[in-house]
Length: 362
Image (cartoon, rainbow, N blue to C red; front, side):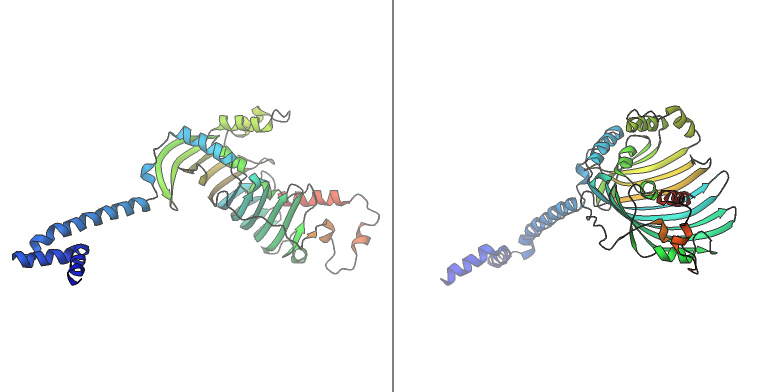
């Protein structure tokens, strides 16, 4: 039994076996141990190599595709995008030919769901505004939830102006601030369509750009991505807009081409090399025309994450239906709302909402 135990020990412990044999033959122990350690060293190198390949994310297995194929796959992938999180940061300068100018920064943290039919975002902005009455700074935080086309909620967390501005009086802002409001149907804030990256915009990224430089495959947050320098292809943009308009009589291709003559738009695009979802986009835009005759310059970056796994959007349970009469009261409350509108039936809800929308665009 003792012999069998020793034999088993030697068989399962090759180092002990080599030492015993070296003593028996009288040869140097290193003579026998050298191949054993060499074998261990080779095994260690092999295992380490496999580990490094595994940690590399497998990018060495990706066979680069031509940019045209990548953009086509990105357009197809975007059509299947159900949800995503995003962070938009940027700087904007806008000038009206007659009335005002704005220069400021914006950050938007948001979620898109239902292929863009639902969204939730918080927008922080800090801007210097110049009007005919003077200059002032606006600093505000606005949160918006779009549960459906006819169900839009707003929460004005904060809004300050320095120096104080008569349009944005603290007493008026205080009536709205830190409360959830359900906006009237058909009266969605313009901002919901201006600063949120609708999936159709992501689809357009791959349809209306021209590749200026192919930077190859890069690593971004652990993922392999195609990185391109791009510029706006105006002909493709007009064609895309025409297709999106679906033959609408209001679409004027000639007018759009003329409005884009002075626009310069260059950017960068990062597309996932496996899923072909857009991870990041960056644009520098100059000379974009405004409806009132002015122009806009913007530089912004959008980072996307949690593709098809973004959190659900839940409408607030304590929202109050918004009415423009909430804002129309005198500071000293000497005249009530009923007395204010007595005998002036022209100032109905539609008229007041129209005035508020004008103030928003102003």
